[in-house]
Length: 118
Image 1 (cartoon, rainbow, N blue to C red):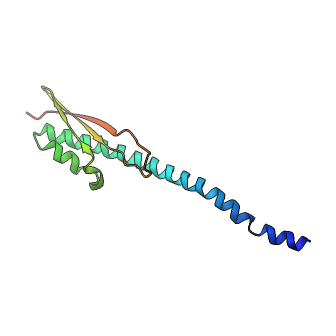
Image 2 (image 1 turned 90 degrees about the vertical axis):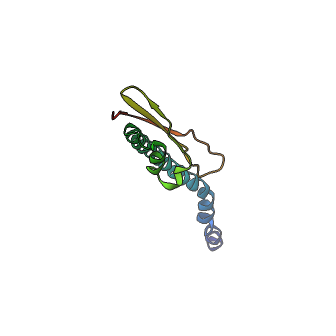
Image 3 (image 1 turned 60 degrees about the vertical axis):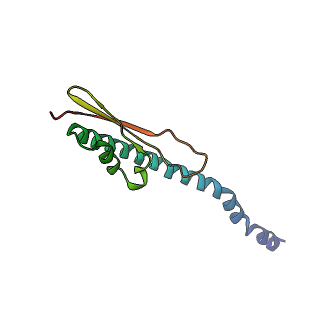
């Protein structure tokens, strides 16, 4: 009788693992998504600083702002400038990509201000 019981228990671990696998995949996807959110926020900060530096020198700030981010984020980047008397402010907005359809996130928004070069 003990032999029969061992035969039945052999597949128990595999079945338990299969039940836990979706949870592991969800945790892994969430971890990768958090990293992607942080990366996009960092890229938005770089884009804002680059755009503000370019705008302060009367350069093509929109193009420079988009060139400062990764190519796969550049199409989803917007960098309007606000010119003051002595300074320029650029706000970079980069849409955060989603790994899972249905998971939508607000865009990463960063602002940088530089003195104008007269």
